[in-house]
Image 1: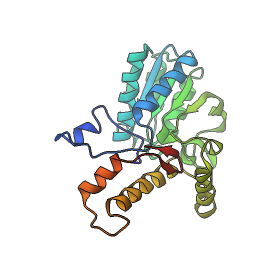
Image 2: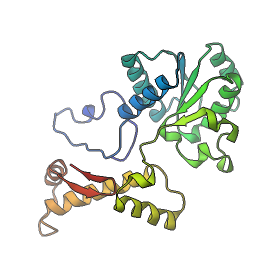
Image 3: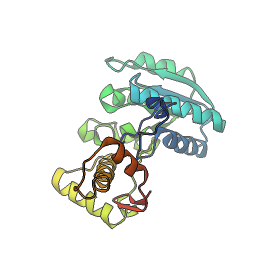
Amino acid sequence: GGGFQTAPGEPQKYYPAKKRTFARVIPSDRIQSAVQVHLQRAAGCARVVVLDDGEVDGTDGAMSFDYAAKQAGLNVISTVQYEPTATDYRSLARGVAKKHPTCLLISALPQNHAVAVTEAVARAVPGAALFATGGLAGPSFVDPAHGGIAETLDPRMTITAGMLGARDYPVSGRRFLRTYARRYGDVPPDAIFGYAAMALLLDAVTRATARGEGEATRSRVLHEIFETRDLGSVLGTYG
């Protein structure tokens, strides 16, 4: 899998026969939520309000964060689902302000008016620190030139994303980032994980078919995925 988001019970609920069929190379929402809780505790967040767009990714992220926060004793005073197709969020922002949050977490995708929501609540609660989940780690949310949030909000905003800084990847990872940028422009955070996921699958197919000499069966490819050991990749070596 290349996706960041997972809801409680995933991926186990997708294979009730108890035979594992799912693998991922990207940190899950459980990992992201733990990092968000750590960052918010370090920032002194005493009263947290979570805003999510009511869609699958946003709601799953909000649920995972709420669970992690409860486990860590972080005070989430409210989770608010906003209407992703609304044209005016001033009333929503006033309602959030009445809760007197010290920190706000936006768990959403950028196409669901996340910029408008963020700017409205930021105006309504000017002293609150702002946090956002990995779905918003892209130009359409962070770059005003692409319709993103105002630059004045940058000092208040912390966004988590699974991608590392370029210098933290191995040589093959840095080469991938350079090649992608040269061909397609800005590198989205998920690009290197999508590449790594496909590389894992192709490596498993290669092993399952004795380098193309045999038939590729689903069961054999699955077996080889979970037998992966010391695979060199753009993310580093893993098993």
